[in-house]
Image (cartoon, rainbow, N blue to C red; front, top):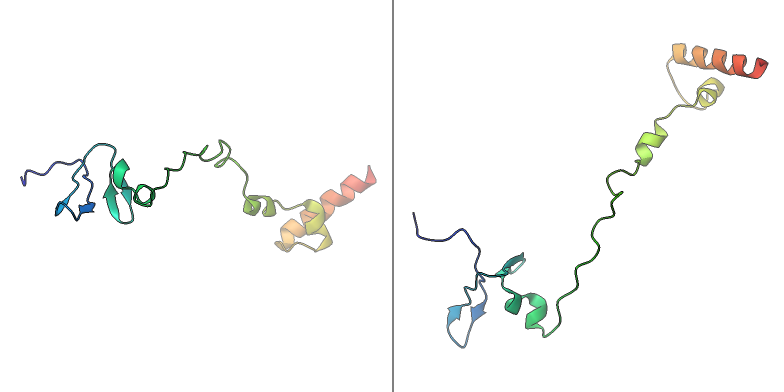
Length: 103
């Protein structure tokens, strides 16, 4: 055991005091390292923190992919030869289209 806690600490260097901040409450990861709310990049620039947005839409993972739509093979497209397929599927599609037009 090294005696260190598992909670992240703010690693901002306070030059006037010659020490790291080491605040442990509200620490979040940034590219410059873990920072407390007082030492985030925007706080150091004197700017207000951005408000959290709405996040991902609820349907973000349920929207159909264009790839799945493109894999749906229409019998007419196969029968016309516009869509490549196995010869057996081509003949079956032609028969299906012929039966549909004779009705």
